[in-house]
Length: 470
Ligand SMILES: *Cc1c(COP(=O)(O)O)cnc(C)c1O
Image (cartoon, rainbow, N blue to C red; front, side, top):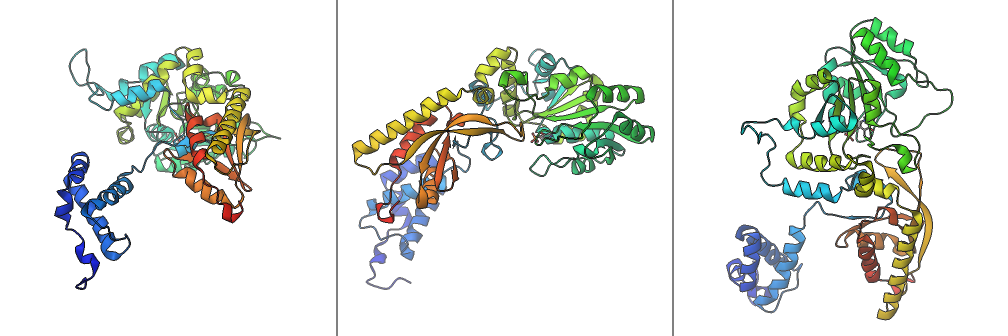
């Protein structure tokens, strides 16, 4: 109970606030039920003393608007990636090409995802992208599912459930996010048959396992996220394909990254492509849509007609299918690869990998100069900014040993590091950067177009706590 004479007795009722013209505007945008809840939340705050008691009924406008902004903020928001990690798993891996974004936005409406426009009859979702993938890889058929892990799981379940999967000891890897080959084999209802040793596995090792019987598939896993050197030996795909053909056992290649152009073009160490696996004659190659391919999250299986058909017919395929928006984005991305030069220009992942350090450096220096000048003009405390050379990572479990020379803007932050990092994260849009030993680092390689100005504006408003001696 609120005591007689307590000023909180003057708190208006919910209905009174809902009837104010400013509240009617909010209701028109957000709906009455939700705005009524926001008004109640504000009134509760005032009653509990958490929010100072407003003088007049229209003083509630700002309070309700703040509550609407707080509760109405979407959980998933676009961020500025200043980490320098191009395929940043926590930031959604690949940034998509504009062509893909547009296609995805238009697929948000009704689309012919399972409708044949020629016959007017029901069509198959699995026809979309399949033609493009086969065209680009020279494969007989292809299938798109939810992600790379799903592609491997469907392939194994369709070809080896209830039987053995022969895998080299050196390829029992963990990809990250809990994707471990032994567990995927088990989840697919198959039995793991490890062959060879950690550092050396020969064709003979596979041949003996296959000859022993009960092997439903030979699985080769690309070591995408680590490297091995020294006294090592592995069996080539070509040898495995020959063994598979002789013994009637399908060969599945878990390739991972899905690079669709020659790695030479990226100036990076050699990385095999799915087209190479297809050319080697594997029954199925599995790779991701959102790693080096640079598209939306998806998993692609490509290879022989029979191998793909069996995967498509498996019930897991239905459970792991991807939606119309993904298919639209993937199709638009794949289309760019019809002309590899165009892909290099238009696919942001490839463009960021090949960005010239001189250009990035020019951008970093320009932001430092602008911020310094504008802060001086406003009489704000100066920031200690410096453009230096650094190293970016491709990320996403690809090119584990590659370091790309880059330009980094460093901000001396000292004791303010945590506070400033938090301020950057709550910027609109949020800016995600790295910090190291009292310095905040902004890598310009992963900044999108316009990212420089967003960063400059945020730095302009960083507040230096002069009392703290920062
Ligand atoms: C990344 C990767 C996967 C998993 O693909 P997701 O798209 O992350 O599900 C599987 N195998 C290999 C070799 C990989 O590199």
